[in-house]
Length: 413
Image 1 (spheres, rainbow, N blue to C red):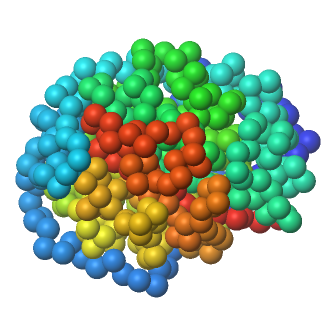
Image 2 (tube, helix red, strand yellow; image 1 turned 45 degrees about the horizontal axis):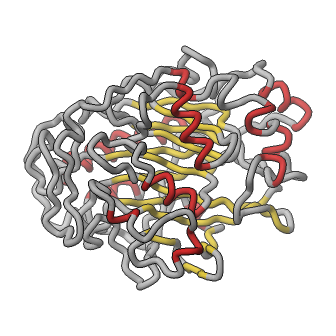
Image 3 (cartoon, one colour; image 1 turned 120 degrees about the vertical axis):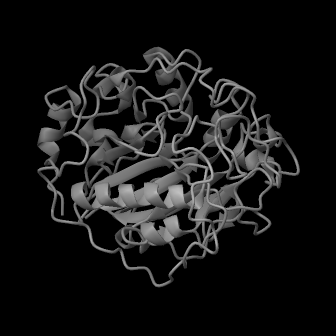
């Protein structure tokens, strides 16, 4: 179990005496591939009860390049051009310049949250208010939305969000921001994390629209960066190298949720080129997890896996550290697919068995989703439950993915 700071020391974290998640210009963690001082040992198999199977006949050859230029190509050929999703049906999953480098990532480590914009006691609540077992990180930690503490437990809503739109692979058009606002997540594992100029002030503005004063980490030096947005304090963060691609890595954050265990959230964006490349990425990430994350902490992996089926090899590989078994999130009509055409399970929120035991239905307004929600505003009714999202947002130009949400009720003791 990871050692956590006692409540009387947590104000020191917020005032800058411990600036692990928000130091400007500094990498907040040890170098990639190294064990942390809190490593409680290698992480063992999380032990699911259902094996997702093997690669279901996918080619083991890399049908594209080993380096993703950034686009989401569903054809399995290469990632250098546009993406036209053959099964989309509603909107073209393409942007002519999306992964070609049109969006310049100006973010540096300041994007991970400086002491001004992501970790001060004024900006996001003190660490004492956001993480003690008595307060539970509710009213004092910023707008709580539809999650709160109850009876010594905290409901935490996790979301995977590759919800950029338009031609720049960013959130400036506003469709994805509205979708996130509508479902009020507590922790977002976000992909293509670009907004306007990508300056620290622009990123702070975007995060505040999702949750006022929320903490965030955004990987640096990436064309289409991954990141984490969190209601609760990010006490450590960084990125692990994805050897298969040059324009993003695996972004991770250690989050001080209420209770004695921390939550490690990892945001991923796997390649579209082939299932064998995706499995290689999964194998690499599992190695990082086993070397760096204490077994006693909670683990969540979320994001755009680009998986064509639930039997892909990468999901079986992830089974070493997380529970991949169903039942799976679905929309109001019971449909599980998360690509634009709703036929493939591109996007996932998967957690370790320690956290999976606390999963509860996701409740939004008067609606209950027993296994979690696939957020497609085109079919969501009544749309007023996810205001300010619009029915048209999930069908916006180049909106290639649906959001995925799961909710967990974790003990504060």
